[in-house]
Length: 261
Image (cartoon, rainbow, N blue to C red):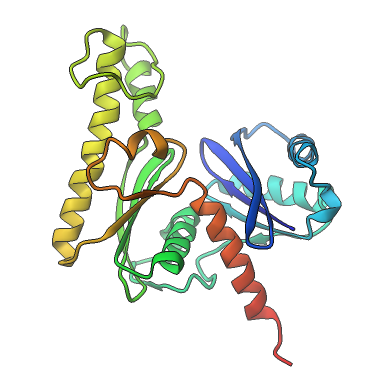
């Protein structure tokens, strides 16, 4: 079995694959103060409760946009799962031509998502990830990664609104009943939910105009299930796209490093 781990600024998402099938997945809050042992207790407890003993996990692949936390999780895997994990970098076999000024600047989560989406759909794509940042990645049907757009994430915007104003509350990130809010909470929810759906729709429209082609728009990330139905341009939600991409890259990397007989 394969352990896949995506370390984000707000959450760590991880899952276990049995072959190509995702057995289970979990989300944890990213905590820089936790030690490798503390993370290990959480990871091993959750997998064990799902009927997956640590000894059954024979490989691990990690994508991280939080460099200070990467060694902690790497050490956790070595201690609790008894093998060295693969760490995704910009030179992995993504199956894409990276038309980016400096590919090392691209978040590995964006590359993993793009690799997975292109492998599945083989068409012009925009991948929208609703995470700590809201990112859009553009991939052509011939596998060119063109770049995209980065905006503050919905939760980041909500937290900023709360922390920088004296009277505005922190609200639940859910779709309000109408665009016209009838109280402060629903007004903030309207601005965030409908506002971010509109942001994505406008960026998708402008990207399609620039590349001269319509695209398939795929959404992932923690808030995709809430925001995608509000959007006019998102076609499909794949909540575990990053984990699926990590499983794909693990297989590709192993094939690349296994000598032919």
